Image (tube, rainbow, N blue to C red; front, side, top):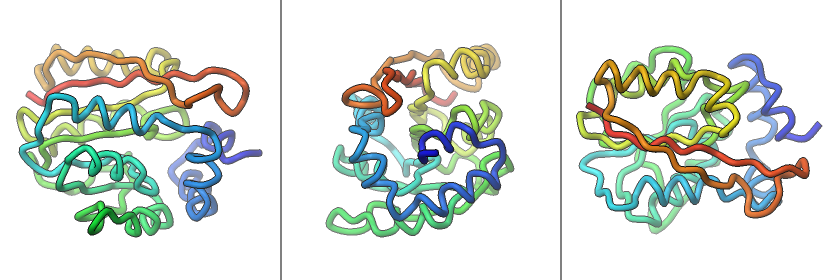
Length: 211
């Protein structure tokens, strides 16, 4: 079974820890490069388009740091990463563009409260963390709490799972509850060509501001 197949079969935080402990050292080469993965590039571009952050940005489920690299290349100066896998965070710590890409790296299970102060971040980005076998919609409430009013969010979710796993419902309720502003969605490809299983995969990037 490939790492991609295993990732979609995860059922618990412990499953995530085991998979990414084994995959971390080769993730960039065996997945990002080998599959033509471009999802992170699209989300970083959408997040930064026409927006200047007024505070640090949180990379949610940062993994090996490929999203942070894209954000830094697009002018985001201060980035923190958070992830459940200490082995993936080791890889992220090594990402360097005239200095470390990340200011801080936080080890946390996002299905639990993260223990960070309200209004800490001026923006948050996530690529691939909110999906089947990883994170459900509910941790978004905690992440919005730690973002300042006006903070920008760009959350990428596999388009099939956006509809079937309750993400659209969560965002609609968050707008009704005035937790976030009205949101927009942008559909992007996950891979430059066909998906590794021979299909075509798309992601829905939800863009919003914290109220």
